[in-house]
Length: 346
Image (cartoon, rainbow, N blue to C red; front, top):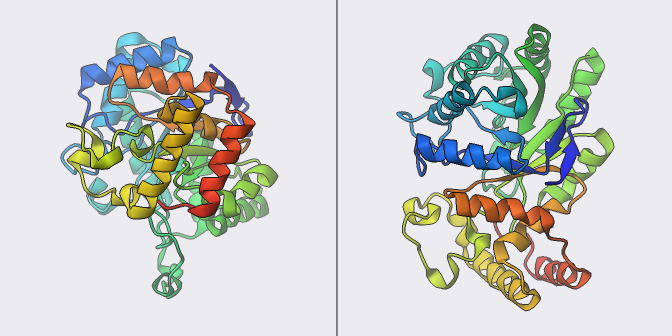
């Protein structure tokens, strides 16, 4: 395993982060425990979850993923072997609708996180997506409707920062981060925290893959200049970059077979780009999924690459991507595709 250092905290964390959002939908508790056993045995000491998981969202199943992790901690006693990240999710059906990023709701959400996870602290506590409407979750551009939103009705940035810093003082979280946020949002939080002399976000969890490199446009420089690490999610575009959907295939039990809410990964432009990446991998004698993950692993602004798997075999292959170094020829071929069809899956 390769390791990086968490900004500001200094913890040594695996370049591969164990994603968990299938647990409770596509994986049962026993399978989740198997994945946790395997991941830790192979050096993956950084895990990510959220209060609303599993995904896709399901009110009846929300929290199950954290519960699975909690029962594993209770069974193994290995909580301190893991750097754990979780999230507060502004999903309207959670906690009776108490989903704002204010002190009261953050405290209530964290009560639930800690109880389900059977731990007394979370290492990185993330805001799952902004309260404000902005271009995230497949929305490429900032629209006029978004520009008309009145932010005065939302939780002030400083209030959120103060609430999270209070939780740091209590020892219930060690640091905090953002997710699905924009360059403006990240810089606003950094500015407000600096002005108040408070702990700022240390990570941002956003999508990043061969099909979506929009992070490079504005946020990558923030990562470098402001020491805010990217926790890259959907590095395989919900499995599309494994090649399993090529030719219109829909494997039984696969994510895009079960749910049609992720069509942005298989639009016409994404299909074309995926075919090109498949050819690059074949010509180089590489497994397509491992090539795609190795590209994400190689980016200097990526603190960790969040991989998800529904089987231990998939998990092993994904973890093994850290051992692959892409040649200059492969990287040049990847750039040619990106130039011809940039970011087809926002």
